[in-house]
Amino acid sequence: MNQGPLVLSVNRYIAASPAIVWQIMTERLSEWWCPKPWQTEIIELDWRAGGRTAMIMRGPDGETSPIEGVVLEFTPGQRFVFTDAFTAQWQPQEAFMIGVFEIAAEGSGCRYTASARHWTEAAMQRHKDMGFEEGWHAVAAQLAALAEA
Image (cartoon, rainbow, N blue to C red; front, side, top):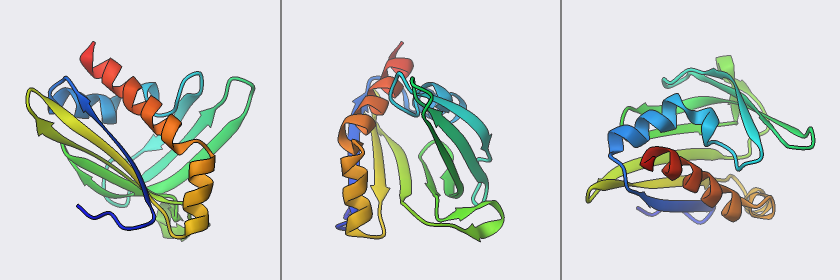
């Protein structure tokens, strides 16, 4: 699938059934969402199109990074898509990205793909500079470790 020029993406084979991976992705998100030693505090995750996503990522030295947005698509067992372009009730805010998280059966396990789509080259470069590659690969590894346990 052509994702366009302003997309950063990681993928990983996970040696667990798609059902197990999906359950962990959606029901245990706080355990894998941000690279350790950071932690995720879930404020609200309304898994439906238009539902609110609100969480706070907390760093080991007291840093905080709140995330507020909406679910754009939720296809059980396959994919969820969210954006920070809006808060709940479709209130616009400064947009950074659209996040797309997908799984697909592959052999006896599944392929996990996570993509960040950006509005501008500058936003994509900022995401790279924030450590996208290292961070999103770490998150994929954390998800895999939980699913393969």
